[in-house]
Length: 80
Length: 389
Ligand SMILES: Cc1cc2nc3c(=O)[nH]c(=O)nc-3n(C[C@H](O)[C@H](O)[C@H](O)COP(=O)(O)OP(=O)(O)OC[C@H]3O[C@@H](n4cnc5c(N)ncnc54)[C@H](O)[C@@H]3O)c2cc1C
Image (tube, rainbow over all chains, first blue to last red; front, side, top):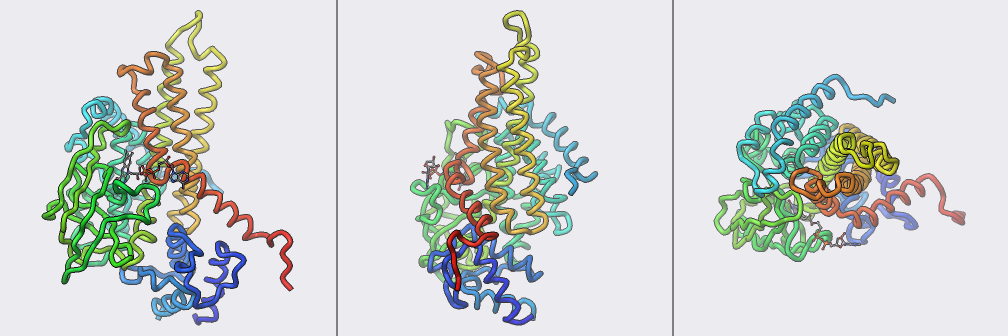
């Protein structure tokens, strides 16, 4: 698993709710108001389901899910 | 595709039904009147494993799966919405700890929540904050290895009895979720009485004055208290209320079928009048549709699919509005008797209104579910007129 295979999957999932915007890998999806809290939970579930990992207590911070880069780093860390 | 309960789920459903018919439904009017829920019944539900049903047996809980969990909440909800609401809030707190809590925190509380020796509750709403949960005003200031909590939580279901509260607060502009013990100095629990519905749910207000809560009692990281912890607990709560509403509507149907078969007017049973038959047909059809929506949401929970979040909103919206309509019609079918304490349908009507307000009000559902329609639709089609390169 590499950033190149992980990022497109996040980009596609985020693209369902963030439209008409070319999302950059370091765009803060929460600060820029792209998504609401309902979506945050779906994002966590998507991450677990797609990459077969468990997001646990210490992983559950906003910083791990702010940007595509951060989400990708989380997945790589969990799969290491 | 197979739309059928497994043997285990059918057996569970049968057991839930019997329990509700013998230990819950016959006493629900009395509990409603007295605005009290007997501890002894909570203990009995605990012995049945109902308080730990949100955690699967494979993870140390007492539940089979989310379909069975839904069936439990439907059957208990058919008997008494206050009893269902106990399972709702206890399951929300238990789920949050099981799903997101640290190992240390789980060791401390989880087994006792599962076996019911600790009763959990959920404190998000405040005097100034309801639907707009992001605006909570309760604050948490860090002091060494503790937070100091100040503020007020309102409408806490079973707050009068609960031992452990999952509460939400603001810490340096970020939301956090904390487990607060009832015995914490500075916490005052003030009972709320005279509610319209779920009158036996023993609501309370929590006054928090400098309550010291260990930082270790935080669930999840800072900033995700609302986004992930509250949202996922509310997802469980919403599923519980959806399934409970199906049970409530089913109770309305059963009462209406019985009454309209026995009561005669104009020389025939009420059920022979076409307008009564119309109400019964609508009730049955809506209940069946609502139940399927709940099962769909439960199925997606068991498979960990992110769509369960929105499917649960839809199930709750349809089931709670169905319960409200069914209850209004049930009272209508019962005439003056339906307005009296001699029949439970007036309780159903009051309880159904609550289901339309809690866990995302009907209006919130109506403004939110549309997002999902646009998301689903546009995910499959290019926007009209779009011309990329
Ligand atoms: C019996 C009962 C038990 C409860 N138990 C708990 C509990 O255990 N824990 C807990 O934290 N809370 C609990 N609550 C509180 C519950 O979560 C809130 O009632 C709910 O979130 C709605 O908030 P509110 O009542 O403050 O209404 P408000 O948010 O003030 O809304 C009032 C009305 O305005 C409508 N409205 C609000 N925003 C919009 C909008 N954007 N567009 C259109 N209409 C809108 C609402 O639909 C509603 O009809 C309980 C409530 C009841 C009645």
